[in-house]
Figure (cartoon, helix red, strand yellow):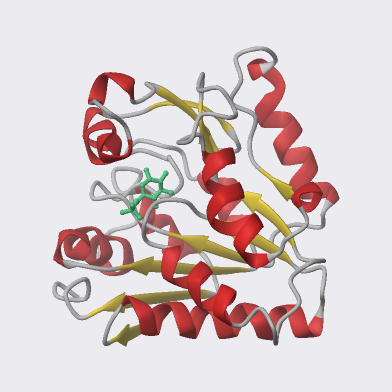
Amino acid sequence: MAEVIIVPDARDAGELVAEAIADLVAGRPDAVLGLATGSTPLPVYEALRARRSATDLSRMRGFALDEYVGLAPDHPESYRSVISREVVSPLGLDPDRVHVPDGSLSGIEHAGADYEAAIGAAGGVDLQLLGIGTDGHIGFNEPGSSFASLTRVKTLTEQTRRDNARFFDSIDEVPRHCITQGLGTILRARHLVLLAFGAGKAAAVAAAVEGPVTASLPGSAIQLHPHVTVVVDEPAAGRL
Ligand code: GLP
């Protein structure tokens, strides 16, 4: 059963999780952090930035969960750009130690296997940050994803494209495909930390934490993991 921590707001969640990451890095400066994109993990990155003078993250390694397929790497909404702008630069991470799946069309057929090999060579992920989509997706593992899946190309659902359209000029610009760590990849991380804020996530959180373990709700895969911490605000906890 996941440990569920209900905090007053996203800022408190960010501080709590930043402290766990700082403790991890204090014990092992080159610890491997699993990075998530979307708005949910931003308070964690913000709290880590505020601790920069006390916590040296320059040797920490990172692996992002996912990437759009077919966006130029320097497109401002490619996850490579987002991770660089919101995580690597503000936190003082070494860009050479931070990896994002390669969503460029050339070589896409081996990008998933390459990414799995890189995670394996790093010794696996110590702490994996996770948000959750309104349809229960984690990473970009949409409903129906196998619990054994590894990093691969997936088609985005219309719901996810609509949810993410706010980052683009119009929904037509949201890519239709992505490359994402699989649920099997995510389950190999040693500690999963799932965050969610706001009433819009309440149903997905309740289903992930307490509902049946089913491929229809990819977040429910966390129930198969022995070390999970769920950090939510009151509205996101509203249906637990
Ligand atoms: C995006 C990302 C996920 C993220 C989720 C929720 O599509 N691929 O990793 O967890 O959707 O996004 P947000 O945190 O902005 O609500």
